[in-house]
Length: 90
Image (cartoon, rainbow, N blue to C red):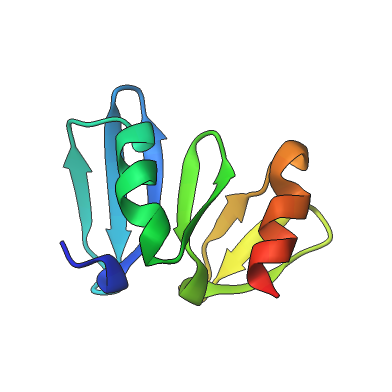
């Protein structure tokens, strides 16, 4: 997987599910925390304990506290991380 093709990653227990811009998903047997370290230098931001998102795919943050992505999916932004996410998107 190439970081620029990854839209987002989601924690699924001790696995991580990857969503790509090619409409494919991959389930890999490493935790989201492992990928947080690897992908953060590639413009990824942790929006929630269960979500890691590629900033270039975020369209906007809605009033309900969700990041709306360019593929029309929504990812929760935790209250704890909202300020950090908003700062990263400026």
